[in-house]
Image 1: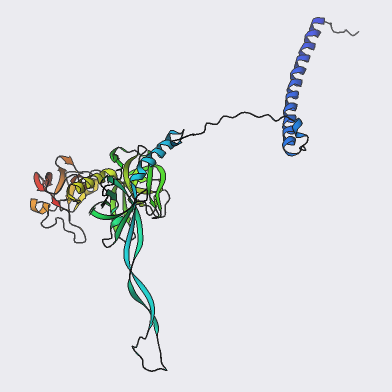
Image 2: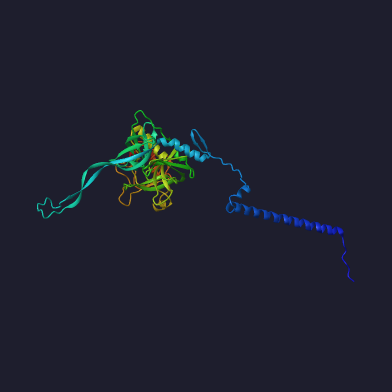
Length: 428
C-alpha cells in the first residue's frame, strides 16, 4: 500500500509566496532591459529614420549644461584661467620694451656686360665677346635681423653680440608701436654673447623692461620668449618652461664664428632665427634670460644667457660706456681625482697651471699672473678665500671682479702652501 505524503497548508503558502516573489523580481528586471532597448531603438529611429512629420510626436530630452566662459570686459580680454592670464599680463607688460633690430649694409651692385677678352679687335670679321659681371656702384640692403629689449628709459638696449657683430653694418631699431630709430653699438662683451646698443630718444621715452634674478629660477617653471621671429614677425610670443639649467654649449652663427657658452638656460619655448637678443621672461613679467641659440636638428630646444650675467655689462656701460673683464693670464685645468693622480697632487680641487699641447703657454707674458710671479705647475686652491672646484671654476670666480682689483691666491707650489697677491689686468 502506498502512503501519500502529509499535506501542510502553511508550508504550501510559504512556497507559493517565495515563487511569486522570485518571478516578480525577474519580471521587473526583464521589463527594465526591454525599456532600455526600446528607448535606444526609438532614439536611433528618431534621429536617423523617422519622417520629419512624425518626429514632433516624440519629445526630445535636453539636459541643460552650464559653461563658464571667460569674461569680456570693456578693458579687454580677461581669462578665468590664472596661468593664461599671467601669460597675457606678462606679454602686455613686456612688449613695449621689446624691439626688432634690422641689419643693413651697402653691398656692391653688379651688371652683366659683354667684353672682348683680347681687347679692341679691329677685324670686322672676328668679333669674340664673353659675358662678365662688372660692379656698378653699391646699394643698401637688409642682410638680417634680430631682437633686443630696452633696459633704461634713455634708450639703452641689450641684445646678443652676434646680432651686431658686423662693424661695417648699420643697425635700425623698430619699436612695438612702429617707431624707427638709428642705433649705435656702444659695447660688445668680449666674453659673453652680449652687446649693448643705444638709440637717441630726444624728448621721448620707452619703458624699460623689468629684470629678474636668474639665480633663483627652477626647472619646470614657466618661460615666455618674445622676439623678431625669422627676422620678419615682430614681437612673436612663444610659451614653454625652463627645461634645464647650467648647460654648456658650443654656438656658431652664420658668420662662422664659434664660441663656448657656459651656465646657459635651456627652454622649450620656441626660439627661431631672429629671436636672438630677445627676452626670456618668467610669469611675473621679469627677464630671466637673453635668447641666444637653438639646437640645430632638434625640436623645442633653445638656449638663453641668464640675465644676471648681463647686469654687470649694463652697469659697466652706464658707468664707463664700455665692457671690461679682469684678466689673470694663466692656462689651467681644473683638478679632480684623475688630475690629482696623474700629476701627483695633494688636493683633488683647484686650478693647475699647465701649458697646452699645441704650444699654448702656461702663463701669458706681462700678464697679472706673470707680474705676480706665478709659475707652471702651481695649484691655485682659492681666490680671496673662495674654493675653486669643478662647479665653481676659476674663470667664474674671477669674473666677479674688475680690472685693477687686488685678489689673494692660495697656492700650492711643490709641497709648500703660499699666498700670492695679484692686481688683475684687463682682458683685451
